[in-house]
Image (cartoon, rainbow, N blue to C red; front, side, top):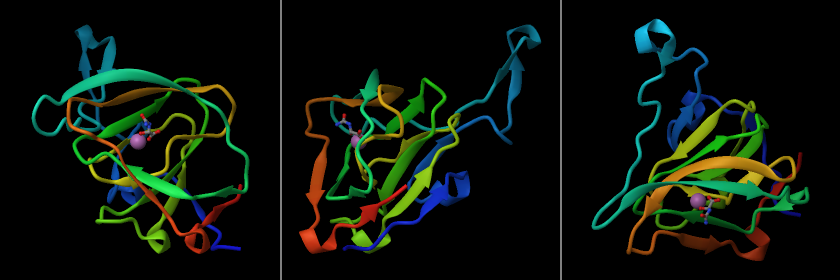
Length: 166
Ligand SMILES: NC(=O)N[C@@H](O)C(=O)O
Ligand code: NI
């Protein structure tokens, strides 16, 4: 049985080594549209990397995986950031490891969002593919399109795979 992972509530401070939290709670805003709208400006930056990189917007509709979940792999996008914004107000799980040549299974951290928070992975941050906590959950995605390959996958040795229980 590999090491069980602890689930932390998502905070901007806790997630700072991996990217930004996209939220309005306790964030600054300024009035626009003649005062009818509050702009929470530049909560995260979109990285599109070299060459012909461009920011695109997609929607992911994700199935809930079965738990306990074996974290067999992580991936990273070396040339661009990747943002996930929940469209159904549901919490989801974020599994990350610090940028490195290969991910350190011992350095994996798990965060649970509050249903209103989104996240933006900075380029190169190791993460697990999206982990919805309800079936057919939907996310708005802002990430990079371009001609360069932009998804490295790393598979842990079987004995090294951590386990994620809810
Ligand atoms: N592959 C893909 O577009 N999705 C992953 O990058 C993910 O983080 O879910
Ligand atoms: Ni990804």
